[in-house]
Image 1 (cartoon, helix red, strand yellow):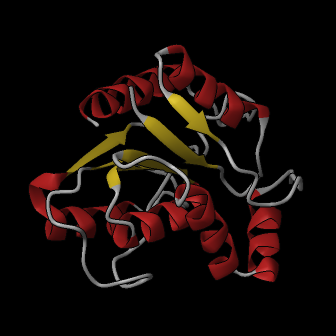
Image 2 (cartoon, rainbow, N blue to C red):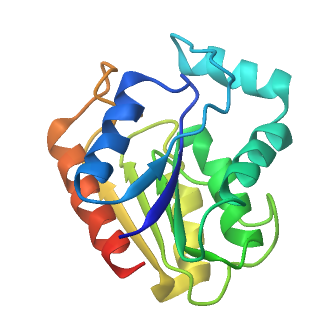
Amino acid sequence: MAEVALFHHALGRTPGVDAFAEALRSAGHGVVVPDLFDGSRFDTIEAGVAHAEAVGFDTIADRGEGVASGLAAGFVVIGMSLGNMPTMKVAQNNPRVGGAVFIHGGVPLGFFGDGWPEGLPLQAHTNRDDDWGDLEVLEDLKATIGDSMDLFVYDGSTHLFTDSSTPDHDPRATGLVLERVLDLLALA
């Protein structure tokens, strides 16, 4: 079974983030969910992003990198929205990573480095009509990375659709995301 680092979104470490982690644990995987906001939680994405900006996006990414440094070779990093920043940084800079997953958006190449590690599997999950979902960024990544990346686009407009503690939650799409992530973890 795989070791996983799951990085939360801009609302913080919500019960819905923990529920997603628990679903992975129930399938036998070891999952760590670091609190990149040191206990702060927010009611809106905008407030959480403002907090992350005040703390510093590099600091948030570095916190994720610190957690990942203690995981065994072959671990998988999963980010949810804002959590995709540490996911990208770890995936591009830690040769022990076995896979990466972006949920609710993505990060463009060039943010932490220009290249993607050859052969490193990446899954990305976003809603087609989500204003925060970075679909164009993800399509550009897919065009650059090619077969190492699977891009899954769901029919919806909400952002945090896998977080069961938010009004954005879409149980059907969450089930598909979990199924596809578990397929990736089975290979790690």
